[in-house]
Amino acid sequence: MNFKKIFLVFFLLTFFNSLIFSQNRDKVKCIVIDAGHGGADPGALGKRVKEKDINLSVALKLGKLITDNYNDVKVIYTRKSDVAVDLYKRARIANDNHADLFISIHCNASENKAANGVETFVMGLHKSEASLAVAKKENAAILLEKNYENNYEGFNPNSPEANVIFSLYTSAYLKNSTLLASYVQKNLLNYTKFIDRKVQQAGFWVLYKVAMPSILIELGFISNVDEEAIMMKEENQIIMAKCIYNAIVEYKNKIEEDTKSFIPVDVIEKQSPVETPAINTPTDTTKQELVVKDSSKTISISYRVQFYATTDDLPIDHQKFRKLNDVKKYSENNWWKYTVGDEDSFEKAQKLLKEMKEKGYKDAFIVAFNNDSKITIDEAKRLSRKK
Image 1: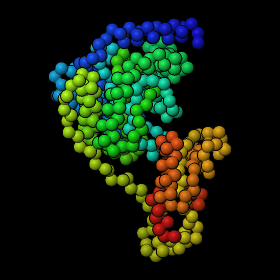
Image 2 (image 1 turned 180 degrees about the vertical axis):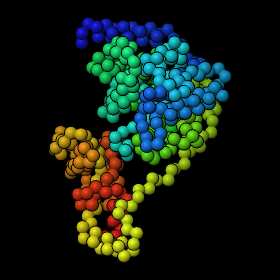
Image 3 (image 1 turned 90 degrees about the vertical axis):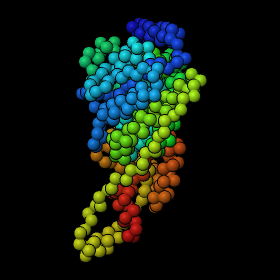
Image 4 (image 1 turned 135 degrees about the vertical axis):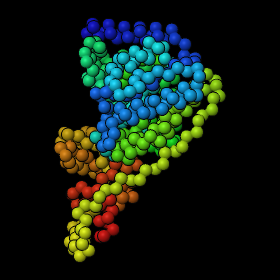
């Protein structure tokens, strides 16, 4: 680490220490709500909606709930329309207004289209590759900004030096940030019924630069068609905003020893599953009988659990996989995808999936094959019934 970087670490540590001891955190009088992305930065892209639009809608609904129910709490938005706001400016808005809470709202995304669930982040060190990936995705917005090298002093939040500074920061507001994050996570899980991806720590620039308890919420996966369908509906956005609002009430009640009541929240109704069109379904009854007769000779259905994907062609005995049994791989769309198991029923595959998730593979999911050809789960079940 050169002299300039050492000085930067020292300067930032001094900066945070001065803010920590100069501000009173006994009351929540000002909340900054940050709708992630905006303008030329759409954030993650779903099939039908952009992340930036969901973020803004939930942020505005949350702000209105706070102002309608708290006369003594000031709400400030980092953006109230579809405009681009640099990350460092978002943090500056919070610091300049001496905010008591900073809440950044986002949607998650993954190349694994089955990845799902809600997670809430606080500022800290990356404890998993998954949390690091989320932080990198959100921090990448820096590169879309004009003069980003000057605005961030050439500092790369994903560099080794960042970990030094992040570690100095984590003790500052970690306790209260984690408390708020736990309330948000609990409320969202209760009413969305999404999978619990836990409260986690990761190095987000927008959290690292604010001098107050702060959280970043990933409402759900916009890359997952089912969760996208839920999040894009206004009635569900209202439910999510109410969940976050009630978490703020719970947080304020805790630190201010207050007893304010929560507002009622409806549970998000389960969405109809996205139908997968039948493959090569004959329209003529006679043809259908022939297809079944011919295909029955070659049907060999198996279910596997996919847990990893990469553009690199790794051997199945790679060190990443040494603790796993029966690893297989297949290639699809220029990606190498790795699986375990070779189950003859979907129910057995579900058991294996649960085991893999317990081992830490949170984004694992079930895939189906007929012999060595990948097919949809629906097609596998249909063919199994005709064997």
